[in-house]
Length: 182
Image 1 (cartoon, one colour):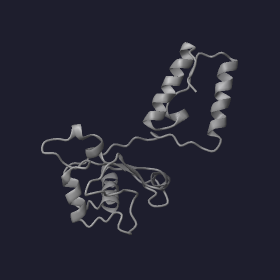
Image 2: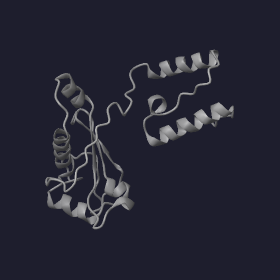
Image 3: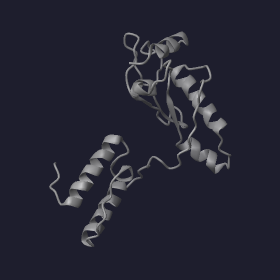
Image 4: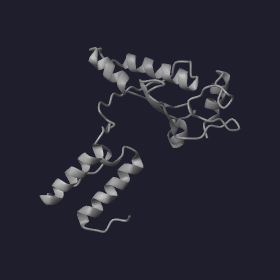
């Protein structure tokens, strides 16, 4: 459930969801939004990867008085294009892009009272065509040569938290010589 401040802020700004207008994959039910956040297709906005509703996902981190907290994740082809053009990255550039995304996606038009900008280069693996074959080949090589190495984590078996946990669980089981659950 989003804090009342967000619900009020969004509806005052004219955000319409589930009223026949294009929306960003969210739903409004009885005036309350629920969820972790949303992803943005690159065809819709190549610079915005997604937005996390921190106030909903992590309410225990709300300050006093509680406020609206969101994380706007930028990157993808937009960031690569900036790099290719030799553009200088700055906190101001990223803050402006994040504010524009929050305005477009969530209707948050006013500047934030606080903004933290962090650049994490190459932090989300991008699997290319043939990724799974490469993994199978690497696993085969490790097995044939009996190398004491296990591949685990976001670069191999999925970038989501649950994927990483399962990848670690399976890697630990293999390292201990235990049977893996199907």
